[in-house]
Length: 137
Image (cartoon, rainbow, N blue to C red):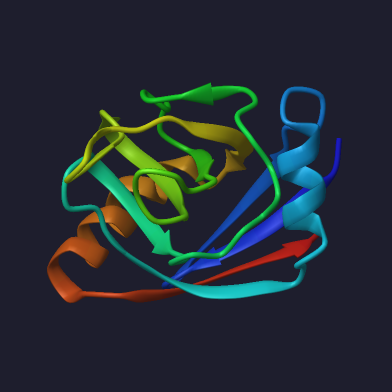
């Protein structure tokens, strides 16, 4: 299981790729490592933050997809009826867009630092966009 270090705002999290459950998605994202971006608060989905990716094409379809990720799960929505994005749940999420309900591939799970997820989400909600980075541990 490939381990990751995820830095978001002032917090550092440990995590791993869900390589068995989402092999194509993890391979596509691994090719981008180390990755840096910005997270903003979701508009439609509840307690989550997301990385807007516009029309980025990861070349993957649905695998291990869900609309209801648990806190600490990252989803990749590969595009279609809404823009491509990566979503991180920090609480209750019903993954949606203005086009309706979406499903994304669960491809990363946070395994350490979970106690800081709610603080991260609230900081993004009240203070705006935060930096996020992913690198191999």
